[in-house]
Image 1 (cartoon, rainbow, N blue to C red):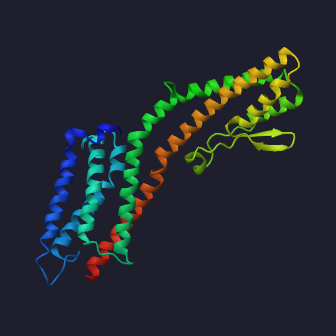
Image 2: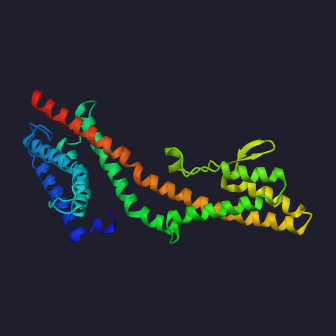
Image 3: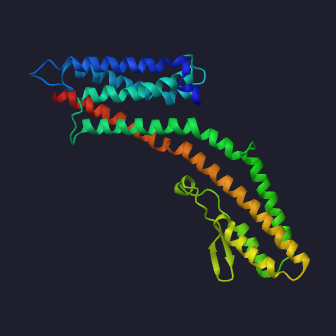
Length: 290
């Protein structure tokens, strides 16, 4: 998916969606002259709009299947996706007119609410797929993730080498900062780019968010260095941990972007399944009791 999805074939599906919404509005207005039966889902217009809405929901739910049928000739995936976006939004108009915005504590309203949630998560998914890839590219600064991971490994090797030239306490602290580095984690840690890095000090394990605790310790020690070699080593470690801070922030941001690209599907797909169940019950109840 990319930005041309919205303008696919000169906005063909935008115009189709607008025509569908316009026709639905006209059909709904034709109920206004009937004083005996106000607009609702039980009129022939309501049934027509409901049928169109149900068929739209069923068709929209087929996109996931179409995306996996690589040899299919029934339109391109991009064409299906463009139609999915615009007709999905038009569905909101069709369904609202079908029920004449009459809601209650029942399965019919449940189906409507689920439909709104599916559309809402779909709009979010469209937004992230259109905007986050560019943000990810800017974050990568012209390099791929493997290249950044390799540099992180090289920086860590340099830190281990330099740590051999400092006193035992600082060496233990430096090596613990490497061992207690954390990237990713659970869903919330990924989405909010939480920095859960820690470091072992003489008083216990503390947060090393942004590698700041270690950098502060190195900054404190540099003015007290007694020989030139010690000062050079501390400055080298400072530079390496500064670079490590940059790389870790970049990788953490990458994890966040990837999580935001995927998380909506964990809501969109289950909500779609729930909507299909609620829609089925809604139709059965309507035909049994209306």
